Amino acid sequence: MIGTKRDILEILNMPEEAFLRDVLPKALRAREAQFGNRILLSAMIGYTNVCKNQCLYCGMRAGNSALKRFRVAPEDVIALGTRAAAHGYRRIFLIAGEDPKYGFDGLLHIVKAFKDAGMFVSLACGEFDRVQYGELKAAGTDEYVLKFEMSDSESFNRMNPSTTFARRMEAIETIRALGLALASGNIIDWPGQTAEELADDILLMKRLGISWAPVIPYLPALHTPLFETHHRGSLEKLYKEIAILRLMMPAIRITAQQPGADLKKGLSDPEANDAAIRAGANLLFYDLLPDPLAADFRVIDERHITGPQHAEALSETYGYVIDTDA
Image: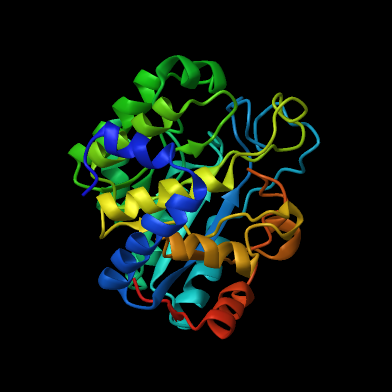
């Protein structure tokens, strides 16, 4: 049983060989006990890559003048999503930069259309006020994704200069208070992160009672302040965190769309996704955007998750049952 910071640190500081022998099999059994051999595949649409924020690590930061910006009109978003619903997808993830000019009424219209289509609607659109979160819930939003990124407030404020840790946590607590399912998580092994800070991140996810852990290791993104000075996050720490989360919170969803050793393969490398699944992860994504737009939705570089082919390859190679139900 993992319940304390000491327990978490023991695993984080464990030699990799001991982790693979003593912890990883337990996490795999915990995932299989909860979900069997099923891996959830969710439709996803990045409907705008315009963002007002200046996060030091994000490829879609406002200061990235090299990025070609786009907005997908609400009716086009609805057409993409309802087509996915007609093909059996019952979960949709809408993700965007914090785009103040997209139009909040348009977002409400999209949510209502997907809810009317019988879909589980998950949103990641940034910080709103309490009234707006309430309107999103009333329109049919089931889950709101707002990552705290890092639980150390000073580091958060330095790396996310367009907001503050206090403001982010206030928004997170508002989401919880309104009764929306909360998805939240961290960046693993961001530049300068200590094992103590990583353990605090994991404990915060537990305290928040998250429904989904959208975690990912730090990946350098072009045209960001951190690109030239820092290396990618550790895969070993990624798998350790996934395993800890699965053992601590057996029923949550955990992102399996993870990078491997070769970043040019993006987030659809079957071997890398399988490694995350064996550590306890269980959620993949199918990007509904056409390739030219999907390539410009660059929170990180080299995403490569357009179409369901990567999920089909996982199923064929490793025998997972791909589930498009919510």
